Length: 453
Image 1 (cartoon, rainbow, N blue to C red):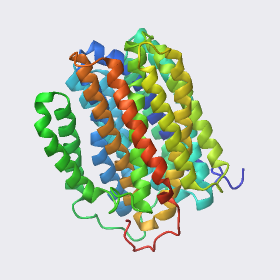
Image 2: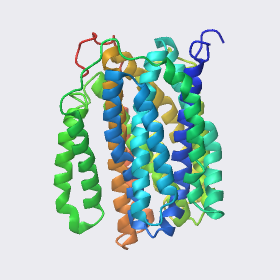
Image 3: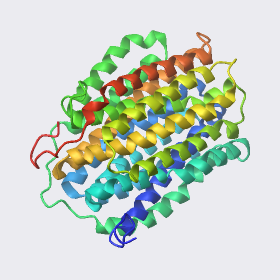
Image 4: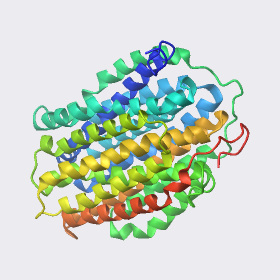
């Protein structure tokens, strides 16, 4: 291949990126499978939602820091910092003896993935021409295939055998391998020719948004804390007003719409996914291994759809976004049925593939749209906004799911009802995305000095 993503000039970058994504994929897929066993051993089922929120909230801070650093000094330092922090998080979680330590480990993992996620997009924007970006993002999604196939099975076997801790500790060597793969890539990264000064107020805004998410999660855990919810919403709103492009909440056409769609799509999908292993384990009595198999099939669906869209760069990207929202809506509706004790558990294997196919089509397309609409000098900031939208919406929706699980733990409602309530809410979110997807139509990039929003 003389002019593809593995051409000699780009081979080191491609191998490094795929190695990095594979590492993050193992963490995501394997941990989701082992988490019900881990929180049960640590007596933390009521804190199930926090296991995800603790990952996603610090990611917001990491994304802002990485976006500013990439625009100002280049991607090399945030890339290396992300790897080291992520490694520390794996070790802390793996050796945790109680939920607070476990959540601290998850928080470090989140900070690391926040740094790495933004840098990844910046590297694609720097190292790949426009015509190769669909293929590059397709390869990024395809990097989830092996972790998706092996991760749930390995995590389930470890949880049932040596112990869930090895899901974290066993990933640590992969960090070292990925770091070695990324050395050639880091040497090729350059400092920006015209560094962009940090945008005033972004770091305090990131802290405000993170505090708002944490406060909301805390308030939703117990009815007696509900009066704190407005405080959390206020902090979150203040932070997002600075961190996201103007017009994101209104889904304004262009970059704001693309950023909004990333949040809505990721939030709907990952909040639904967070309850898949738990539903199969507690409602249908599946083993940890069997409960992780839908995630394996999902990895194939996601990667296959992403590969297909990469082979068809001529397809309208906003149409792929619309189809993606529709597929995730069908998957969420199907999971509302699977969550009921009278439903056959095997139905999950069908409905979840539909949702992941939609993610493979839409997520890569959203990434292509963002880079196409972003001036070179603002790719770091806009990529940071995209990742922040993803993490904030995911944390918010997963937090709502965690609150519903906590309610089922208190006996307020059954787990099946709790899961179905979240699933149906995510159907509504996706239908909103289907209706508004046309606002993500690509156009000519803004001039180099134009505002991102």
